[in-house]
Length: 247
Image (spheres, rainbow, N blue to C red):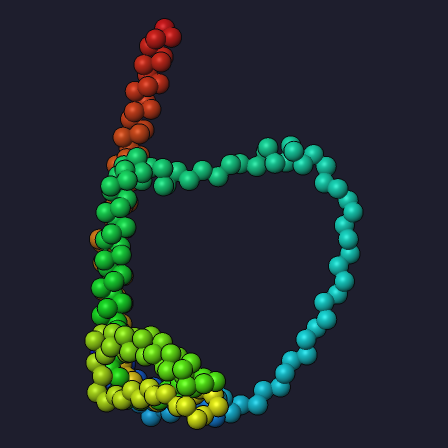
């Protein structure tokens, strides 16, 4: 008994440590410019540079493909082989269609899309943007083209950034988009740092899976089994009527 208690307390301690580790925020920092790009990951005591990697791996020698020998032998009785192959029937979809009809299939699809939309919305809210700094320089060959290009860039970027600010929690951000009539080429750079909590994303994912399981899959299985039973009973009745008529 004492050994079992010790093992149980050890397992509870390990489980508590895993839960505490999942409660710690995972942080990313991404810096991009024309000269340098870096992606940094921080979690617990780990600090990993995802890009650029400093490892110098040796390139493996690519094997030259060997010339394939042509097979001039013609298959015999191809028509008979094709006729002997069993034809695949999509009985599941047909049974589902017979059980639910078009309206039922549309309602099932709507429920799946609703669960998926809620799942991605909750996941986006789980990401917190600590910093987002964007700098875009717009330049073209002459002043008129530069002004038109600057307007096109603003028309694309500002709605996207506004939607991002509305969907995610943003602490610090600054967007600097400007025309430059002297520079030779356009340039863009940004710095962003964001974090999320792993246990929150795991809870959202499990909730989504359970909704699909109990809200869609089990209902489908029940309805399809019921439709198959009704079809089986109908076929039995038809066969019995045919036998009675034959007698």
